[in-house]
Length: 286
Image (cartoon, rainbow, N blue to C red):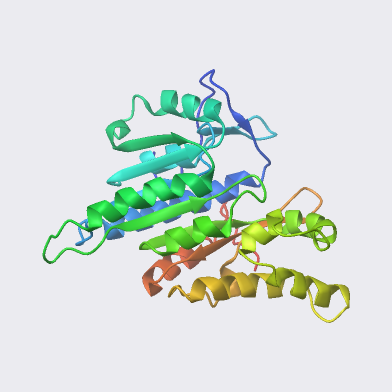
């Protein structure tokens, strides 16, 4: 599969129903994975790994009936291979289906499948990568990792992001704009931790929300800037708000954004390039 061809066939296995906006999200992912692995392969990384903690069953069906490869199949179909692929999902059926879909791939022996919560799974994955990095190899850099963190809603906790940040990990992070808009009025007066507390890793978002309620600030820009400031503390370059593609529903209401974080200016350039154009060839509106 080349870096722009996401279409697939219905193979009779379970398929995740998805909104029409998913096509552009997967298009961005596919194009970035292509740029990433082609440019990084052959350099002095100990290993290059792909981490997908909300991997799903591997295929998606759009409302128009089109079937698309999901993120795991996009990753294993790139022109160049990752050294390891870590696929996990909290739903055992999703992982069993994904195993069947990956079984005939030449990358199958490189794939580690896990069932469980992302916050628990990432500890296992991190230990594997850290153990490998402890093996002394002169002139070789630590492992480079790319994580696609794409849950359905508010399932991504800060502890998962923080653990990945402790490794050498570029991340594409799902920010549930509609979910926060919907849940914040209810969670603002609930005891901690709530799902939004878990996403941000603390309760600072509540201060921002109260300022918003008082009419002093908008909501999502300050929240995003706060979240990104926490990532910046790990050395990520996160300054450009235009590099946050917004995905909207049929009523033009924002659903979520993708946040890309990387410690390299080259990675940020790749992301800017690959998200400049939509799957239909139209330029993305900023």
